[in-house]
Image 1 (cartoon, one colour):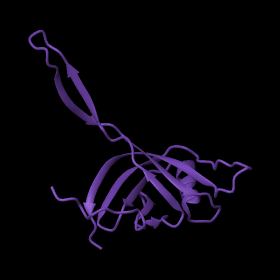
Image 2 (cartoon, one colour; image 1 turned 90 degrees about the horizontal axis):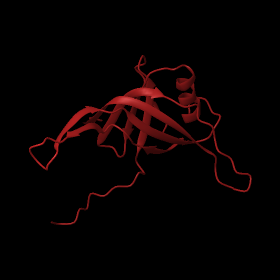
Image 3 (cartoon, helix red, strand yellow; image 1 turned 90 degrees about the vertical axis):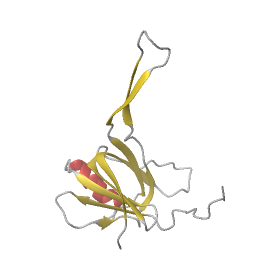
Image 4 (cartoon, one colour; image 1 turned 120 degrees about the vertical axis):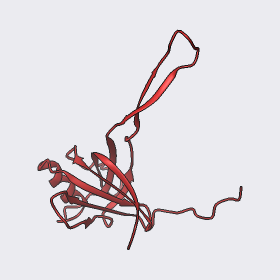
Length: 146
């Protein structure tokens, strides 16, 4: 097999969010620094019978998604912290749209399930960051049209 030349970096990634009741996506890419997907795997079933040494196995329904969105801690309106904390406080169902690169789009629906607070270390010069957990369902993959 020939080695790929289609490798990518995250330099063109975008993260957008909106309330499910809204038509307008808000691009938080300017203050978001990481999207860490997790969850969404199938429930697994297995058992043995007297007849065989091999297990019977099956895939079940899908578990919820548990994604982490990390952002730069700011106190600016309409940036990552302001929006995600607001969705958490209001217990508002949101849509999340993630594009690792213009081309494919991952979308899901769910809730921000933690308040997020920046970790600070007085002995460090690091920029403050914050993490929010997104618990959702209905992960869809599509190709971008624009």
